[in-house]
Every structure is written in structure tokens, then in C-alpha cells.
Image (cartoon, rainbow, N blue to C red):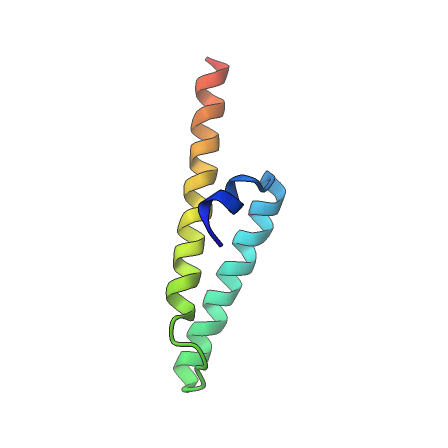
Length: 69
């Protein structure tokens, strides 16, 4: 998932995707703790996706607050 795709999503879609990625990160951590990890890059990809989503949500909040002033 890249930033261009994320920017095209609605706020509700971003919230849903954020919950999914956080759940995926938690599942990865549990698998890693038990030693059953298929994809060792899963955590890194999930963290990066979470950061991208949060960044875009923050940008939108800032733009909305500037627009209302």
C-alpha cells in the first residue's frame, strides 16, 4: 500500500484499514512469540502502513483546521 492509494481513501476506509493493520501487527507479534512466523517482514510492513495512514489522517486534520480559520 502506497501513499497515493491511501490519499484516495475516505476517512472511514482509513479507520478500517488502520484497525486491520494494527490487528495484523498484533497477530504477527503473537506468531513471532510462538515461533511460527511465515513472513519476517510482516511487522515492518504493518508498522509502515500504520505510520502512512496516521500521517495522512494528521495531514487531513491540519488542512481542515486551517480551512476553518
